[in-house]
Image (cartoon, rainbow, N blue to C red; front, side):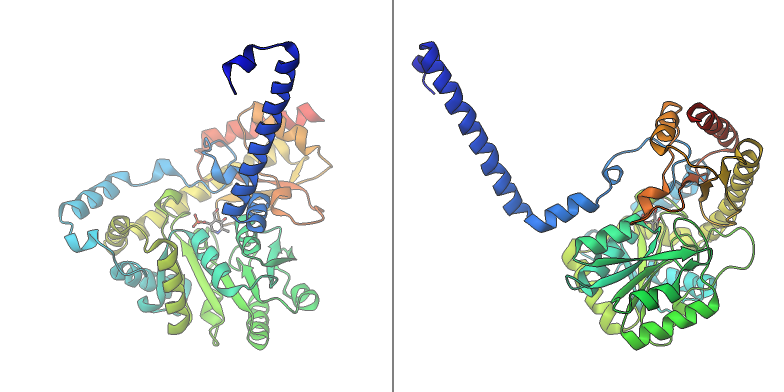
Length: 424
Ligand SMILES: Cc1ncc(COP(=O)(O)O)c(C=O)c1O
């Protein structure tokens, strides 16, 4: 626009403002169309719908946040000693492009661990190192689902699994959970056309429960008859505080229908971004490895070298034993504080495993007000609503305890009791 026009009469100025506004509007519309074209319309819309805002934020670690391990108990001295050694004696061949499947000695160490501790049938040459369970699930979605394919997902269930399967075109079939995990009878009766089932059979996420043997065998037989993939997310099975460890579902699979995934996010720390998949045969392994290579070529290698030494030199198992002790103490502290201060407001049972507790409201609660009261006291209360598709008929909250020393848990439970008192 020329200087003269801007300095001209009221009328001209009015017209020029209008012109400017409509040209700005056109520009915005053009940019939106271009962005949508570049970012891929429907896919973008689904992405915006499924992603949780908190997944892209940096969060302060506050009680009762879930998914945070006890960083205060991590053996940083050992890790940094191993890291220094790795960098000091680094073989230059590790600085180039490596096998997309991951560092072979790490895959061997993981295979040894899984065979002994999780009854997984595996050899190192069918293990793929991935950048977190999230990548394992994204690869499954890309390779195993066609747009419109239906997938089973427990309800309430792991939000990030549901999101990524939906993003790649899957149609969720929410399956209710019983105290023993996914309701297999319901799933078979109502959704016999499921092409893929995502499940956490050793410890249902987020409400707990273990799928019994008879249900596992029924599911495996059904999946084989119906050519349905079973994705077993064994995310926190090493963290069991009482009773015998629960063997994996994959260990019972005689037909190669289970894809097993595990992660170091819970037992070490999430930012490490190292997880693994166990693929049932060579062909499936090769397909996943090629897809992984196309997604990000390979996972970062130096952390894999450090982790290999950490496992092979016995530190990993020592750390696991220590963490089980600490988490069990924190859980017992949480249970006894809840019993003392909130037993009339919340109902809960000892999960004997994991890093959080699911607690249900004993009487109806205005969750918006509860969350506001909690935020004012620097508490985070993940609501079961977030994990639920459709009818939210058993309202409650999750209480993460793993990351918080007992003194902090005691204070936080008292603050939570104040929140309930304030809103009632
Ligand atoms: C059910 C479940 N699986 C896996 C994970 C870990 O995911 P990742 O390995 O991508 O960190 C979590 C983390 O919260 C989870 O809740």
